[in-house]
Length: 428
Image (cartoon, rainbow, N blue to C red; front, side, top):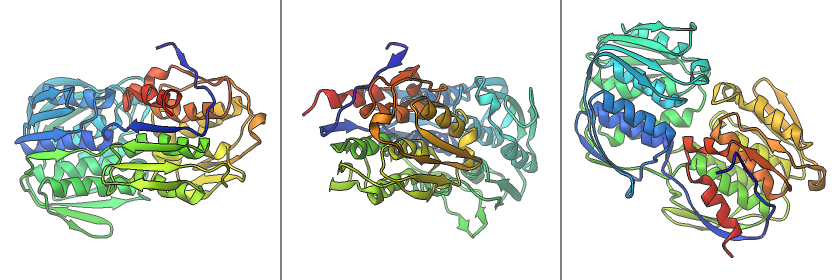
């Protein structure tokens, strides 16, 4: 692939695309399987940078993994309460791997170092480390206080309570939750702060149920007894964050798009993006258990909305907003600033390059759309952020001469994104 991708303006097309398996569910399923200590078959897995980092780390921790790339299946025999000795685990910029592995390591015994690339080492982990410390796990910062790389020294967990601040990332909470059944004592997990991305916590709890775990859920706490994970086979849904780009494509271009591997009863919070676009004018043509067909309209109005539950699709909405007839305002997404890049500032930079009007504020943004011919083509940076690349690509459906730099960063979650995107130029 060249060092940039140039989409060409097009509209009123009819296309069928295939959505990959969910990154969030794949990495959770891998950790849950490891925690089970049993043989589990995982189907429809996502094979991307983030999931490969997780798989490689679990292999180092003596989990037996048999991968069938053609059929997108993994057979994993988990290593419960692992023992390890001065190991190092490199996880690139995979936030789920960094956070979930930390608590998995806490259930075992030994010393391990977790480290990532430059951006990973700029993403905060203090709230999770504080919780692990409460649990009796020794954690050392090896570079900057509050950030990876970290060294974990564990002898297992005996504590009976822990508090977790979920105001920056729900992944801290999910990390502790999944490890909790393998602690040595019953644990009361208390949630503090304004919790972001709550649907991801619900996803974690739903998957734990599927893996045989029982728990007691109150408004601000979750109680979990020591117990055995038990699941022999698990089917991974299509990725709703990845689906967002093709749902948006239909609305922006007034086209008909069928998405295969789109689960009707999804446990993913980003499935709510469909509802957002329906409010803006997208219509459902057909909806089956594992696919959806949607249709756009010639023009649509903007929206004002909190995206606290769905920050990963806020970038997609930003691009949709550029071509609306009225302004769009998004708030409650301050944690976008600690993702693969500061996504709010990055959106402002790139949308400004095409003569768009993007107003940035601490926890969100607003966009005042302009007539389509007011926008100008340009080279757009992706900041080594897969979601920047995939969302900005949609601008090229309407604006000529858009060039997406370093498009290969989509390999983090959707390696064949551009192959699926380019089907719009080939199908009737």
